[in-house]
Image (tube, rainbow, N blue to C red):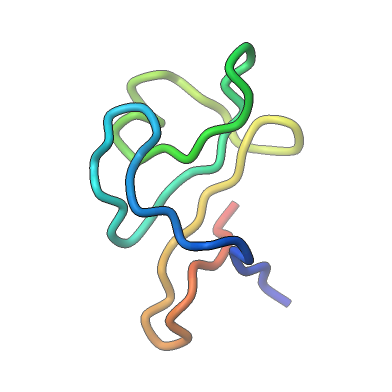
Amino acid sequence: MRKAWLSPVPEKCQLCRYKIIDEFYDVNTFGMGWAIVCNACFHIEGFKLGVGFGQHYKLDKKEKTFLRVR
């Protein structure tokens, strides 16, 4: 069973304010709490994925929901 994003769908990256379209990351910023970030900010800032670090979500157009990738 794939895990879906259950909260309201984020509209913008909480770091650069870029519009979230088809993927986002829910990451631990270690010092600023958890944040929703775009693909660019995830890679620029060097965030990690995994338990306690973050999760990656992509839009499943068929199901019309964001599903966790990692």
